[in-house]
Image (cartoon, rainbow, N blue to C red; front, side, top):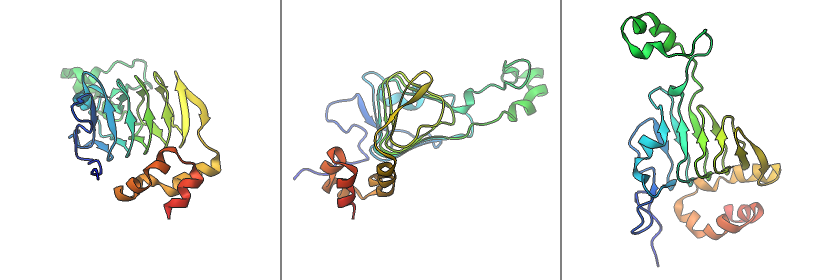
Length: 212
């Protein structure tokens, strides 16, 4: 019998370098990735930290849950990209140093933060989607290709567009509540393996029946 796939294998598909699991790849402590979450990119898969998480020099974190699928070109703009908008100018004088830096450092340090960017579990983010700072994406959500996500996405919501808007929910509110309680992504991998067909193609009720 074949082995259960390992979450520690950077390249989960033999001889295919375009698909990488992010948890064993990413080293930046400000980026937290759950097990089995992967990124697909034919040219730059292993450069996710550098090319796909942008302006990550603040205190905020990027947190992505387990079993997420990230398509080529998905990018996260972090809060370090923000400019103050409460004065006459949005120009970041402080970063040029010298007297500009000395005179404005306290202003720069007081720039409001939008907080961590958090992606739940079992989230599918489509080709070239852009996630803005501080956004929270719920479990089971789907982000359409090319979307610009500027606000929170509910669990099991499908969003698309610029700015991304809710297209529909994948399930009824009661089924979504049920799936959130089941939280199959937190099961031991052996249990997930046992019931993988139900997880992949079953209904919420069928999953609840095997959840135990």
